[in-house]
Image (cartoon, rainbow, N blue to C red):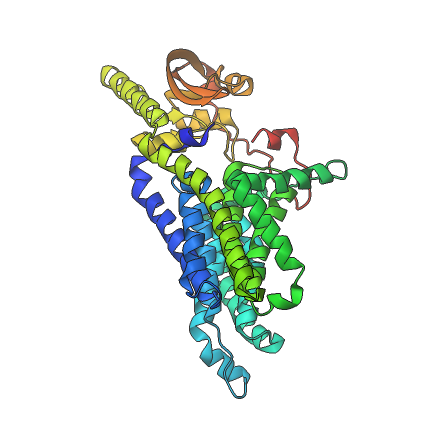
Length: 462
């Protein structure tokens, strides 16, 4: 699927995703500006402005911050946690434990709430906690005892809030669903035989953010790491490196290198580039000729990144395609017309893209892939009247539906340009008059895994 085809805005979620993109950009600017040094740039705002320009014009970030996924919200949560961690202070002259708590009471309360929010937004937020911890450690002047005095109540509050959420809401009502969702992150796709290639492809996936900026950001990361002593004076740099490497490490562990996951890596690397150039490169330059040459090289690098990115992003804005949205609306219109002719027939849709269809059209739907029960049992329970599949119904799903329904292909709708997902196919499901439909016992899926376990074929089908 091309990036242009992904730019199909969902009308009921449009305000939400635009706000997510805007808040990500604003918090990114604040992070870069608060950590900027007065250097050749003569103003603290230039590195921050450059970082936001890279983010705003990057077509990869532009597209994936405008669709209904969890990654933009996770990025916002992390940026907000970093801003809060920066506010921690060491009381002077004597950092006694009560004084440390009084000085940082608001920071403790805010971080104690933000950390569980990060993890509950997306479980992989756990891999971003080290970056927040480092920023807190740096703000407390790298004093281990003072850091522990603040970090301990933060952890206690975060655990208390999570336990309250789990015991009051999850355990009584959604325990099976909770286990099912969390099991997806437990198994690993990396083995002794493939670990080298997995790591290589995980790093190569950073190129989704754009080859030029990816190469420049990785080079900036290496340049920063070969100067470890200077990093203590610039805490935002190791913080962003911990963020990017921590999340990339999880992607390698899971070996599920979906492009949207790299959005969480692209943001810290994009912020890192202008900060490293301003704080570690220009700060060391001496002499007007060298500085002018470095400034010219920086402008050329920025132009190399921004001009093609701006061209592609503006192309998306000037020539948007709504083929997916159009297909969804046609499906909704077809089902509504059929419902007027036969009100007794269910309007519930069975589809792996059911959440998209529901957001775009308001149709009720259930997923034909993910779920705590087998597909046949869910079909008996909810009695869907329609199935929407990409190109065709897969064999295992047809095997589950065939004993329960007469499956009739009634319409096709062009939606994407991907050869595996270019047509949405609408099937009408007519209940078969069999005894199988009256069966009520529900079999739970065996999808739980342990940390480090290899996935089974059933789990891989998910």
